[in-house]
Structures are given as C-alpha cells and as structure tokens.
Length: 233
Image (cartoon, rainbow, N blue to C red; front, side, top):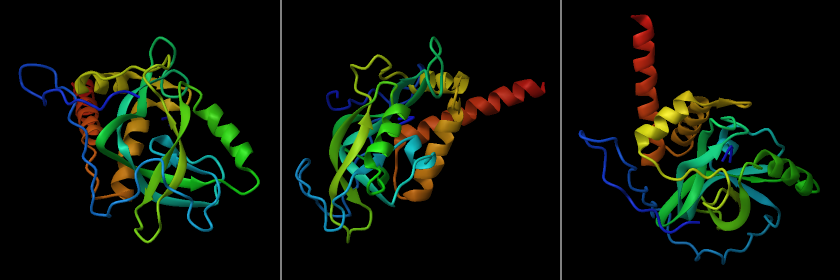
C-alpha cells in the first residue's frame, strides 16, 4: 500500500544452497481476546463515521486530515510486499514493491485506523483513492483496537488483489530485497518505504512479529552494507 488470493502458503525457509524463500505468515496474537466474526461488527457508540485502516505508508506518511486514530489490527490477512509500484516507489519498467494484504485464515495485520473528519469524508476519501490508484481497491473489514476497552468496528481498507495490473506476487525474499534496493519513484526510494514501515510497526506494536517485513528489512540492510563496503574499496 503506498497503501484475494487463497490462504498464504509457506515455502521452505532460507537455506544455504538456494535463494531464501518466503517465510511463513505471522500468526495472529490472540491475547487481546476473541472478537466477532469477520463482517459482523457494528460501529461503537460515537464511532458512526468513516474510518480508514492503514497498514503501509498510511501509517507513517499521513498527508491527509483525520479526527482520531487508533492502533489495532485486522484478522484474516497477512501483509506482503507483493504489490508493484510504478507511481510512488518505482517507475514503469522498473517497479518498486509495496505492501498489500493477502488472505490468511490464521494471520493478522497491525496498523492504524483513522477517523475521517466529519463532513469531509468524501473529500478525504477522494484524495486517498487518488493516492492509492496504482492497483488498489477498497473493501470493508473489522478492526480490533489494541485498547481492549474499545469494541471492534468496521473500517475501510485499500487492497491490491492478484488481478490488478501492478500485482507482482510472491518471490524469494532475496529477490524482493534486491528489487527494493534498486527501485525509486516520484515519492522516493523504495528502501525508505520499507524502513519507515518497519520502524513504525516496531514503535507502535513492539510485541508484533511480522517475519516477512522484518526479514526484508534485515536483508536490504545487509545488501546496503555490502554496497557501501564495496564503494569504500
């Protein structure tokens, strides 16, 4: 996401004889207690408004007005760098990779829900539609606030499904890392997107273990260190 597929399957873990494969999806932490099944939540009192869930750059690049924000998660998905970006973090012919959500019955994704300003919902959503125009569509899901005293409620999210023209799909993590390292677009380098997202999730939800995100962060930093070492020779 600068914001579906069957359940995510986990290829074999990184090995020494071949390029590392995709790690398995992180499992949803259940310690906040069970919630209603997907598709059944009602907006809690005082929250009958439009809420948008950010799980990618909408977490750290908040260039739109909002009235309130809450940290929390959505269930039934995992976050993956499987969406191509030719309008923000890459260009046509050399796309970057940004996150989308893929269906995963055991997964969950942490992020931030934003309540759009009363009376300006249409205006702000139109801006977000333009910002996320590179292959994303909207859907409604249930949001579970990190604060367990706040009941779950419906939010809008942007998702790049496998049938959109910019969808790149899975690849070995080292290949994804190299693509991120070499990509840049009108919004900046693809590495910035990855590092800002990883830092934001680490800060907002220290207990979260997003193997895909943090493994990519590690690999890209290793590649950067190698390039810097070679440049110093």
